[in-house]
Length: 513
Image 1 (cartoon, rainbow, N blue to C red):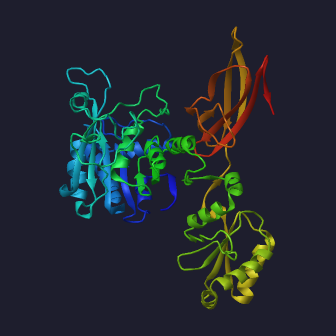
Image 2 (image 1 turned 30 degrees about the horizontal axis):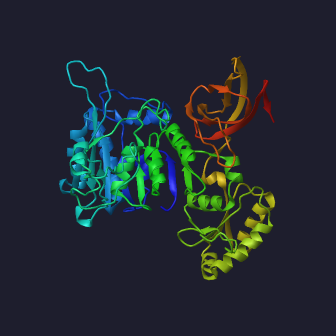
Image 3 (image 1 turned 180 degrees about the vertical axis):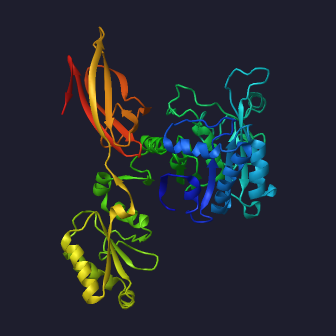
């Protein structure tokens, strides 16, 4: 659990594989119950399947669907952990009564938080609904659950009356600063945070908006994460959506796990991380249904070794140097060697047998006597001589070496292709050009979306200005100068490719190689 993880898949199945009592904080914003067959946000196949499962039989079916998942979450929370469940009026009563009170117990209820906002919608013969509910439950109040006291700004009238210095607590939409705990009073830095959170939704033009219609403001998640966890704690969001929880958790130096059944949700969340991360940010892993051969084949060798050993069900060797040719072991101790290459030759077998015996001679001899596997070699492919040598060792020396192609562990696919077309549409009197960029991606499984970085710097990596572009078309105004523009294409398997354009605008518009 030390590695941050973005995971594509059904959260119910994934949660079953997570170690019990390993999570400090869970925030979930599940799809709301709204009396429709299903509502589609991202529009990809994984999301539609999830919504169809959820809407099978009215409110009873919805509550059963959600309860099964919350039961798994309860198992994963540490004794000092908490859960924050975000919902609205359609099902909040059912969720509290039939899910949270049943699973966590009424005695472990902490707060019903009201998030209120101004969102003017037409409502016939009723008041506008301008708030959501967030239920906060502890795994156990008896275990001193994580709680950091936050403060909000004092009213202007109080400041004028007592002359107290105006300092604002952890509201990112105001100051972004969290105030340390102090004794309340006239000289206090603020007022203790209550359960009524007046916080605006994200404006259409806001810098943090990524194009996800249900996106929650970062200030909301910053308040929850700061209040109920500490740096280094593990935060889980099993309905990741636009990735607000993991983006904030990453920025606040928490470890995190984000899960979603939508390819677009996972990839947009990854882009959001890339946008904010720097050289000092912690690394993360991305778990998809399929993996790109080129990315795996040429990624950092030690990261690949550790990752593929875990995917195989083994335990990676934490030593990056001096590991004597052993990159991990299975739960029963049988050693694993990883070769990040193809067409592995026969000489690898001889060296591996020596390494296996040095690693644990007694285990080697025992497995050899019992006709059991004495070691695994993982690689992209093996040549004919290697396969023949493994067969000979088994027949003549009773030494069983298992050759494991990477494709037997994880499915491999080819990343999408991408071409860029550029059209100069107009030029004004100041020499500013309006340029049309058209990205055309191709993949056997279809294209999900495109993303654009109009100020690409290789040393900083891809930092998207446009997160979600479903058509692959963008208009951009350019003054005279040199532009590095990068565009990514993402296919329906979550695989991606990137094209970089170096554009020179000086009298004419030219693309430099």
